[in-house]
Length: 457
Image (cartoon, rainbow, N blue to C red; front, side, top):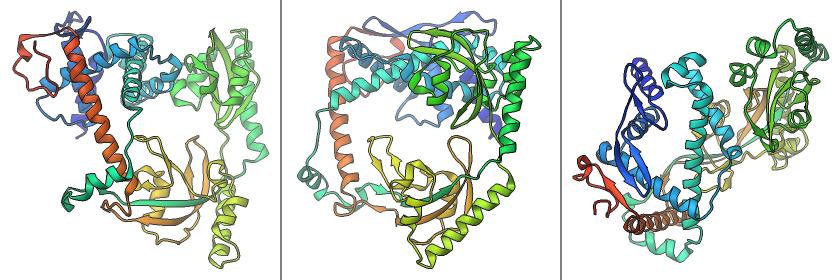
């Protein structure tokens, strides 16, 4: 399994996201296989998409040699219309996603920038630029699709009619979902530990100012932000809203690239920052992050307090909701009586229901075997900001997996009908668009069974 994964990774990295494919000696070998309007689709585009899909476990509905180039062609139709409609996506819109991809690829090659550049046949800066353009195109296509279907809605009567005579075995299956409440306490960090971290950062600043070493070298050696540490602390051009507010306040006020900032405390830890370049409303800086270490004693103290709180809840001295509102230090759940919220990626709705795989792993493991209404023992978790926190959880509700019904799962069924209507609108738009756009296919693709009619004219 590991050998297969490594082979797929090698193939994926070796093929560029855009542009030509390379032979063993580095020369470009490529050909135009489709033309859509004034956009060409290259063989290397198809192979790159094929390897990307292999890494992600995507299965094709049909012959990949036909399905993949058609999908690329459809994306070009959406992009062309998005440009006509002046739909824009900025670099800031995709910056975080670019870095997620880069960091993921670096992790897959053991953090070696040189190895990644060797696989992709280009420097990291070019990899980042190509990826940024590709992701901007994807976002633009997504916005165009949303615009096409934004006026579509379905009524309750339409939902009932759609599912009225549908056989039971054809109804969608709703996986098990849970609603979870938490009370969270963050273990206190000692003054001594805070001073230790600050003294380390002051020491780095002194060494840089004295010319003993560079900021980049110290970032690579000591920064606890693994993504930027590999790049000498560089975070890339970022808008103010993409950064922690305290970090942004200092970063955007820097004016001298030779100076090192004062120590900055953010939700992630403590930083020193150095300006690289300002460009419009974006700034590129490098930083060194140090995270104070929570002592075992502090963790045990927080766990002990939470277990005591849980015992009082079980003894009905006060409710879980009261404890969450008055004691919890988790900003996201405290004002909601401890109830965790989940953002549905497909619909954009905020819901309190989670499938088990969507919960933080530590929470999912605890509530998996709990009964509804049960309060857990205290446990620890590493939150999204990389901090150790302590929690007790209550399983508020469990909805076992089942075939959807109008009475219990109306919103789920409504989404099914809405998605179907949206897909029909988008499909018809593509068919109509193909009729008005110049297309030319390589002879090898003229026997393909395409999803959309009209490619061959």
